[in-house]
Length: 452
Image (tube, rainbow, N blue to C red; front, side, top):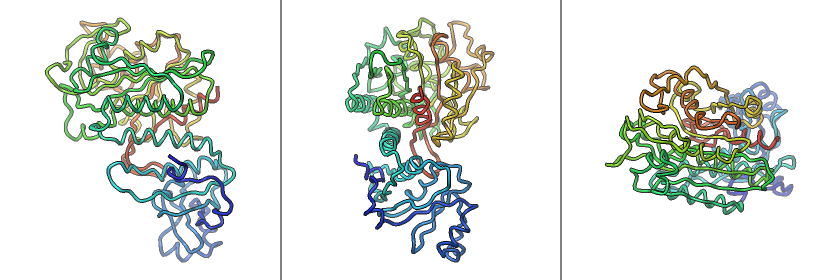
């Protein structure tokens, strides 16, 4: 795809002179800006007061509301609503990073048009102060993540998700190995158990990239292409969005693509356990006990808590090479949404310094992260009478925390481990965040990893 497909073009003074002007104004500054451009009466008639997500077309150009000016993706509302044409930014709130402003536009210009014709994308002519290389890396990753998640499971099953991973690896010169189907049964019994009932075989994708002397970092993403709940079948409303249950794998691929495109000095490994949690005569059952790659036996209490099972085997595999850092991303629990809603990515980590760095990057990247505790006492909720551990808690309390604690069983204490329990979906459109699949946490994570 070209830059124009993402809603922007490089700085071009001649084109910029002909383009429609944009002024981004906060509620506080709106009145003065409107008066300066003789648009006060029009604004009054239209009810425009600079609220975030509002726009006001005038003869001189378009005013875009920034609210309190705190949302770095504020320009996204204009890209989502304006018609095809060339636009140029001529004013915005002080202190807002121009590259982030352009990213907001590009994120707002996103259209998922695989199955229907969508309005053509308006184009922002970039100003000179925009870091175009960084903008391109970030928006390509965001589009990749959104496209993967938005694609229905019929067209984004385990086969298709593997192909997508191979395409990303090929573009960046990375190597790929895949373990599939019955070959998983002995070495990765939990991945095999979860995926064995589906028509497309379960698999584990292993991507490697980077110099041998780079800092070894492993990313692990939950790739459940559709989650019926298994024998603990979900209700219809709960199942409706389960095409997004591979959002962890999609986000990990987006992050990996950014890392490789930026040529960060990392020895990168990406592990994607990919399955469909389906129902058939050989589906795994509540009450079953399976060995894990780590050697722990795991009791199954609920087949609808399958994501942590496939991650457990992948984590044990990741730990065998003793990387300096392991990061998981997964659409793991509804409890995380009850606690933090759809906007915030909960972060659990054994590495306090890294966790603080990622959380601190959130506001600068308009990619908010919220720290959550690995509260050790709740590990008792995972006790099993017949196995080493139960994979789901015996209580409804602290569901996101207990899921993170289960995963922690499979990472040795000496390895830095960070886990994101993401939603990967925007239920109601906001500036720069159209309704549908979304990248969560990866831009803040990238910034943290890039900082050393």
